Image (cartoon, rainbow, N blue to C red; front, side, top):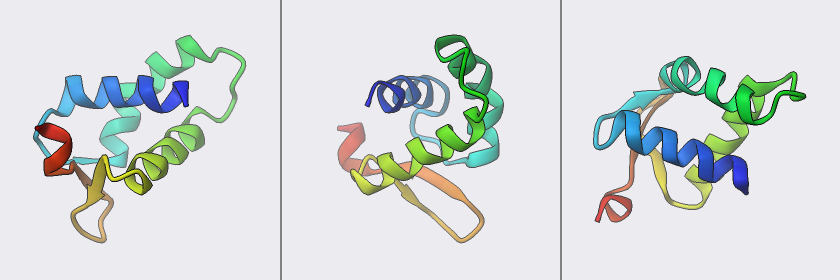
Length: 77
């Protein structure tokens, strides 16, 4: 759960109301998450797992089949 919270903080700071892709998230978050989890060798996979969890929790949603996400409108209020 800590991973999701940290990733959510990064997403909110970097993307706010703008749509974003998994690739953009990796570019922004990979280094920061590696700092918090230095022994994790699969940071990209963990970030994808966290994105799925945030989607399942209704925090973010898919916009299209190209891997584009955005925050759910309820999350921004």
